[in-house]
Amino acid sequence: MEPAKRRRRPPNDPNRRGRIIEAALETIAKVGVADTSHRRIAEAAGVPLGSLTYYFGGLDDIIGEAFRLLSRQVSGRFTEALCIAEDRQQAAVAIVSFLSESSEQKRIEMILSFELYAYSSRRPALKPIMLDWMAASRRALEMHFSTSQAKALDAMIEGITIHNATSPNLITPAEIEELVSKLIA
Image (cartoon, rainbow, N blue to C red):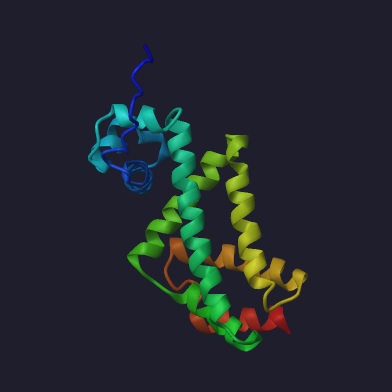
């Protein structure tokens, strides 16, 4: 007699893994990486605690996936803004606009970026997230600018973002526009 074939059922909650990753990002934004735990993530995602170990090898895996999501979201918006630009001037305007935007989302993204910098500096396995993010930003910039200009613009963007996160409009839109103009001249 042949053994009965087990039918593989689809998951009851096919979006659970994604919800866990999003909840991890929200948790990191609220309490920081140091206070992020399996329990807090499960609670934020509205899933049983055991789901986390089903989908991920450990807390570092979940946190890494959360930071990958952050990287894709932010670099995706930046790339989209530069793809819409039809020439260098429009690309420059897009950069100024991106840097001048002030919102709760940007504030949270900056907090998460700080967390990513600190976390990845102690976990070499996560450095590719930072490197991939920087590479995506530079590729987007290189659609309109030379490689050396893209590197300079990328560093300027990073610096202005950090400065303005600590003190909004420390570097004003007019000053940003002037800096961008000098770097692309």
